[in-house]
Amino acid sequence: MAEVALRPIEDSDLDALFEQMRDPEAVLMAAFTAEDPDDREAFDAHMAKVRTTDGTTVRAVTRDGRLVGSIGSFVVEGDTEVTYWIDRSAWGQGIAGRALALFLDVVPVRPLHARAASDNLGSLRVLRKAGFTVVGTEVSYASARKAETEETILRLE
Image 1: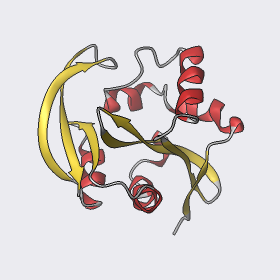
Image 2: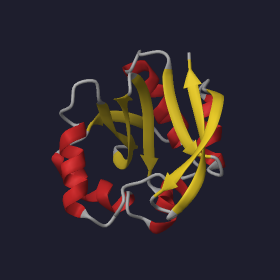
Image 3: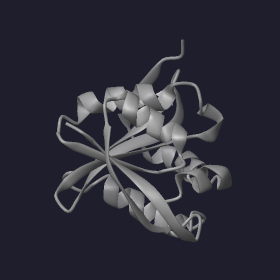
Image 4: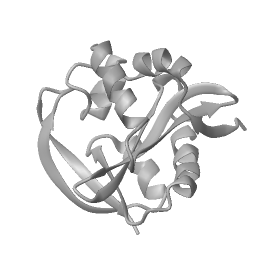
């Protein structure tokens, strides 16, 4: 079984993370993404901000020492939310679930919130398996789809 681990994001990770987060199929699945996933300047500014903002925790996800994604938490309107992005080449291998389990030990804040496009069944399955429960849905504009999209809202107590 592959070893999944978390570590701080390093400057040398940014090129690979940028490429992962602009993969068209992954962007479409995530739905709620950067307005322009190909805007490197905006990506770099965002990463600089999340790596230094109080209340935000961000980690690289590795499999057998190789970078395969990122996971983080941030505060929105007083609620701490978790988010993750796994390289499409690593989907379906249990990496997101293992990374989330590890991350839940790093971020002890509860309740912890999460959101996923309601048709992103893989991500919803990962969150439910980690103990998150569905607390509602809302429809909002998803940049990646250029359309109103239903989002499932989850919470971990």
